[in-house]
Image (cartoon, rainbow, N blue to C red):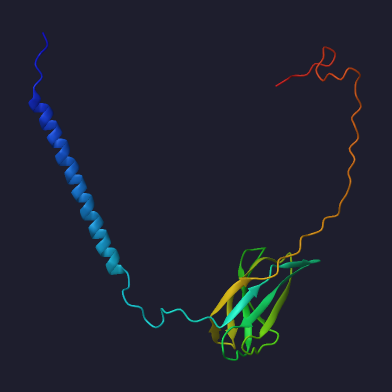
Length: 191
């Protein structure tokens, strides 16, 4: 005969599981609420005048770097999109050296340096290909101390490089009669 199983321990175990699950859920909800409150206190609620983005005054079109012999030509165009005349314009590029990965900032003047509204000027810089690995646009200056807001756009693509076409003829290896690679006369291990 089987011993009778008591229903009381099973009910007690089920009740304990429900209580523990409820406590874990309440603890999780309290932690989420505390985190949400602390995150809302850390976020700024009012914007100041310095936080407001400046209206771009120019559009900088950045061309892809062109290779010409041993030189790399970095260039593009700047278009005055504002209603005012911009003077003393120069583009700042950050150049990364190949040798030691240090960066250098170069200021390239525009031609012409003064742009009327909707007028466009160009910039170009020639570098030795073996000296620098990359160039990145970092700013637009009007004079020595005034930095202007700008937007960028993709410029001219680099033309595809032409490769010299060579025809390579590989001769047929001489055959050894039967054409079998592995024979009793010429045993070879097969992997």
